[in-house]
Image (cartoon, rainbow, N blue to C red; front, side, top):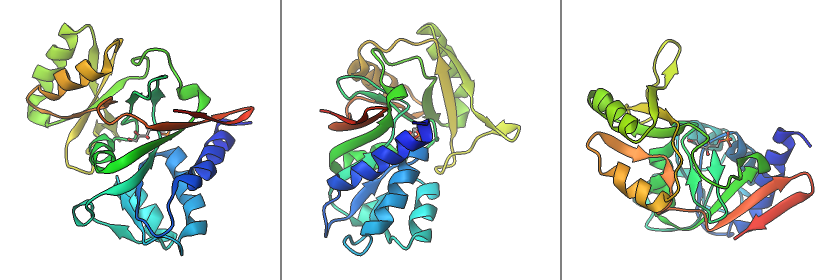
Length: 222
Ligand code: 5RP
């Protein structure tokens, strides 16, 4: 099976976690796009979704799925999103699609995080994928030096020859060369650095369940 087919497989499988009658939290990315497409088949059974990005909001609305503001919904039973890396404990690196801050917000208001990913995302130790960090632009130079002190190399993500601007009007640093052996401690530490909006380690908001697309079918990791 191709990677695209594996993403479609887990996107479809995630429907079993959607509760009829309840609003669902929706992440961002190419795997989530498959989930959104599958969710259209259930749109008459749910009030709608809380979305983690402008891109997912546009896709949901195009399929006729109402989108609610996060502030207008107290709690969600489930949040469904992809990952750039996930380990056996459910700790993740996210933000390849630059939506990490809103993803963490929606994940935090959800009782359960269902991660959907193809098997290439499963790793022993987080850190091979360049770690996304959303930052306030005026802190860039100092944060680059702070990551260097940890042994990393940080670069501002570019788009069309200029720094990429997130849905929140901020920039993204992509940090290579890190081995994140203690994701909980790492997330807490980097989130304290002034100028960091969100670090793309999801350890405090880890996955409760991971649906992993493999050539042998969907594997459920809990
Ligand atoms: C977006 C994300 C995505 O979930 C992550 O990048 C995985 O994306 P894809 O499903 O396209 O591989 O964190 O900010």
